[in-house]
Every structure is written in structure tokens, then in C-alpha cells.
Length: 463
Image 1: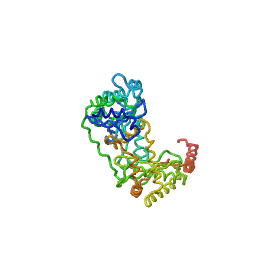
Image 2: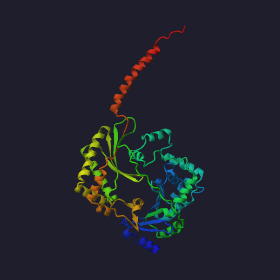
Image 3: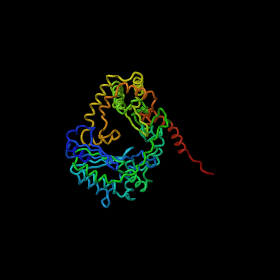
Image 4: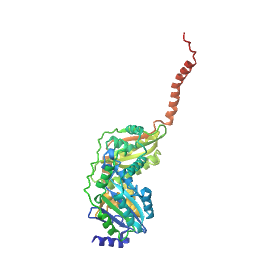
């Protein structure tokens, strides 16, 4: 019956190709989640194989383990090496890459439609047959180390310990116990750990296969035959994510360089639990805050050209931040503007007309938010948590359901907190340097004269 449904889906692709939220989704007997989306874009498919393992599944010492294995999968099959493997993909007309995030590892492939089954077959070979020998591991470690900024020196470790090497949000996450205090290393990672990672996590019941585009009518049968042959395992439980210890200074200045007139202001708020505050409501508040920052900091105040609002997750916590690139002398005026904005939203709520306009824009944006096979495959990858029974959540409907009163409630709770202020700026401004240099010269000049006089004084011959 499933084959019949898939065939009918592919034969009638043009009927619902424009319906972004509707897909043909099913689960193989071994637990592999399959999501197929035929589109009217001919000659191309976008493939995403998403494996449910990422950085957050490992302790700080071993966090680079999934990233290292991801690179090893591109090191080549027996006897061909990395270049030989890449040549095989090129011969099929495809391009591929992979990405490791906090929660998953995704293999991203763009390929011509006529070779979609061959490309998937090559991907299966890579995941199952890539040798994990010491020489390959050593080479992959060098690549991962270079991607992370090169060898982690004692000076860089010291700078990290002094909070001089991190972006403001990451620095706050370290303070709150939500992120690792030092950059994860790879030198100590062993082959046994990599083999265990592939065995315990790279299993069909921990994977989602997404294929979007000009789908082959034989694709469902191919997936059943090749991917269905993979053996499921008892997937390990994901560890609990760290929670905030609440132990962070409310305001800190983070030094970035020695001399300069620029500064970046971040006012970071932990997102509180608010009844009815779903993803759509938070996104609409973010859009509203972006408009406020644009109006107040750029148009009226002329303090920042491109202020922005950002939402970021660390551990089990999510943060919303108000940010602005400034001149260092404008930090306090900009902070005063932000205080007025947050106080007004906390006490008076949102302007209904502005909210309706911005919500209408957000709903309209859904019509062009994921155009083309590649963008659509990426959308499905990012929205896997909102997928159920052949349908992804209707974001436009979710946005329509949000009321101004819901967003008002979020703003009241959010801005009731003091938040965390982080200011990134160089150690000295040019004016400060202009005062400092003459002062240093004034202090150094008497010492230099004294040294010169002592050097020219005649020496007394010994008796």
C-alpha cells in the first residue's frame, strides 16, 4: 500500500508541489524516517540525511568527536583517498558537504535527478564502509584543528579563561555554566571512540532522509531496499542539557583589541516561561523589537546604522538580545534609548497597528521564505521537530493565531528582568591614547636623563 501511495504521489506531483507543508512521509521498519517532496523544478534533487547526534551529546572534553567523524566520512573509501571519493561524486554531477551542530549532523547533497539513486548509494557506502584507520584520523584531526582556528596555544587558553577570546553571548553562556570554558580539542580522541560513535548513533532509527525535487518513480522502492537493509540499534539517550547557574555579572566590558573608537552593545535577556508563548509569538516579538531598534537607534537617534535583535540557545536556555554597533562614546546614550524602549513595552505593551502591520509582513514572507529545492530541503531539515504524519507545521497559520495580548505578556515578563549587559570595545580610544602617550613620555623622560647623566659621569680609577 505504501508503494502505491508513493507512486500516486510522484505521478501527481504537480497537484501539490506548491504546498510547502505537505509531504510524503513514512517510516521504514528499521526506524528510518523518510520525507519525500516532489516539486515542479525539473532535473535536480536536494538531499539531506540528518543524523540525531551533535555537540551537545558529549562532554566538553569530547565535544569535537561528531565533527571529527563527519570529516572522516569524506576521507575516501578503500584505495581511493579523499580526492578519489570527490571525483566519484563529481562524475555523478553532484556536490556534497556536511555540517555538525549542537543537536545533529547533516549530510547535504545537490545532484542531477537522473543520478539521485546513485548518489544515495554512494552516501550509504561512505557511512558504512569508510575505514577509520590511524592515518586518516590524524589527517582529519589536522583539518578540524585548522577549522577551529589552529593549534590551541597556552596564550589562547589564557585569553579564554580571562573572557578575552569570545563573543559576548558565548562569554555569558560560559559564565552561566551553559557552555565550555575552553575550546574543545581533538588530539586525545581515539579510534575506539569514533567507532563507537558510528556504531551507536549512525543507525536508521536515528536518521531522517529528506529528498526534494524531481523525484525518480523508483526512489521509494530503492530506499526500501537499500536503506531498509540497515540494522537498527538501541539508540542512546541524549544527555540532559545544562541549565543556568544564575551566576553572571549584570554588566561587563569585554576588551576587543587595544585601540579603537568602535563598540558593540549587547543587552541579553533569558527567555522566561510564559503561558501561550510559542515559537511564532517569540518571533513576532523579535520582529517588533527590530522595528523599534531601527526607529529609535538609527532613524531618530542616529546612533547605530544596523541594530538588531537576536535569539540564541545555549544548553537548556534561550536568550533574546538587543544589539547595536556604535561609537564607544555612544554606548551610554544607546543604552538609555534601550531602557526607554523596554520600559515602554513592559508597562504599556505593543502598539496594535504596528503589531498588525509586522504580523502581516511575517505572514506574507512565508510565500517566498523557501523557494527552490535547496531552500525547501533546508527548511524541512530545520523544521523536523515540527513534523508529524506527512505534514509540517503551518507557520502562516501559527502567526495568524498570535494575538497582541500574548506578545504583550511576553514583553512584560521578559523586560521585568534586569538582563545582562555586555559591551565589546577596545582597551583604549584614540583620545585616551592621545593623553596616555604624553603621560608615559613625561614619566620616562626623567629616568632617561638620569641614566644618560650617570653614563657620562667620569669613572674613578681604583686605588
